[in-house]
Image (cartoon, rainbow over all chains, first blue to last red; front, side, top):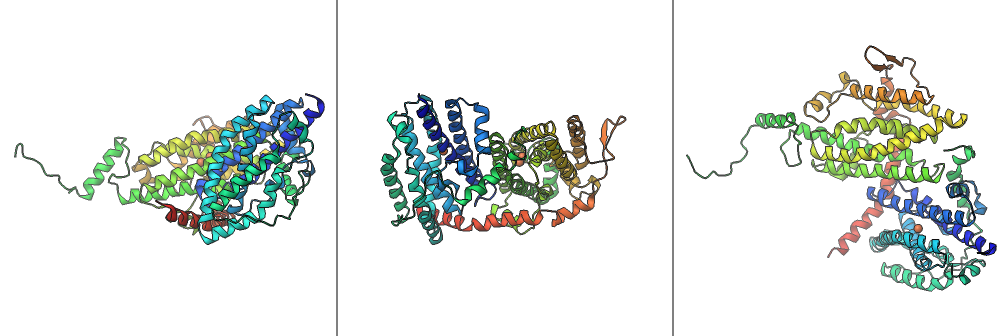
Length: 255
Length: 320
Ligand SMILES: [Fe+2]
Ligand SMILES: [Fe+2]
Ligand SMILES: [Fe+2]
């Protein structure tokens, strides 16, 4: 693999990892505060899985760039500042209410699903293997979040209203999941990754159908353009100051 | 008359006879199961204990939960999140155990949120640093294990079985706490200082977890007689001190008790008197975090109301 390609793939893996990490982090904020005790358990599982997936991607990135697997993930997570994070904005938004959290997770899970299906065919073998493994967990996530979307969309007037509001807020951010960076072209040509913009249609049909079955109306006015992964909302800084505060008390110390 | 068929007879034993039989069963080490006859007081004491225990697991998620987002590396983050998640699971098993005695989840939650039911006072102390994750895991879960190992042998079957399951997980909690304490105690001077400060704050509240002296514990006698408890508060507390003190000292940590010394004659560690005014004050709701903990539980309950209503409405509409 030439240096350019290697760098592009590393960046791609780190961006994927950042998405899962930040979303898992947001989800973990519910532990102890969920609407029912059963969700303190079930949703913590999803948070654990997402953070676990992030670690898998960071480790692949470490292997690729010749870094030490054991220290790389902690270094990039705990000692990068917000501008250097490459997660999509949707995952860094505050957890909001249960409708917002569940809908975000659903949209993201469905996105991951279409991407992972293609990644299992990646010509980069360790990426294909990891994708196959992670996909089995995502099947369970999707089952869980789909059930909540239905329940809340079709539950009471209030739950429906909250779901619709969450959808209106989240939709432009969700569409931004499919914005490819220019460097991805290289990776697509090498058959390392799928062309995400092509997957967008399939995803959009899936989620639209499902959300409409849950009595939700798809937002039409998506003029609110979400900037690329190099740009963040003010929420990421706050999230990171929480996430990194203990580790940064003494960067040389072992914890 | 020989050979005559016997009609099923209703239980005509007097309450005294039933009680005698019940106590004989306990003396033989038999487990009492949900459908069995039991004295009202036995049922009442168990519901009180098990629901308190369940509430403790649930409220106990809060102080450690506050550090999930701040865990200093990814491994610690996953472990802590899984641990707090386990505590929710413990709450769930215990609510189920209490339900076998006729209590409902709604009643129990209502009692917690209204402040009528108690939970372990230890969770009314604040978590101020990462080191507290070590102290809680090692000391607090360690103390809980002693109590729960005893309860795993208690006379009420569903409670005993819940405890067996829970203890297995608590041992993992204790180990992760101990691992944090060791790492910090042997770490940089700042880390060691942070760990010492944490031990200083958690030591006495942990000893208080075992409850009042046996002489001041109104329920102890009946609980022991009916095989719910098999050891007294003071016995368990002494076991904890004997077990924990040498391990902490070996790490170069100190224990905030000037009276602490090993007593050759008895083979036990002698420790100073607990501040019982503080103990009762926290039990009565005036501890450093009672108000915050209850506010957090009520907030989650209120914020979740529309979700639970939606679940119920959906289930109603879609049952076929
Ligand atoms: Fe994932
Ligand atoms: Fe527990
Ligand atoms: Fe525990």
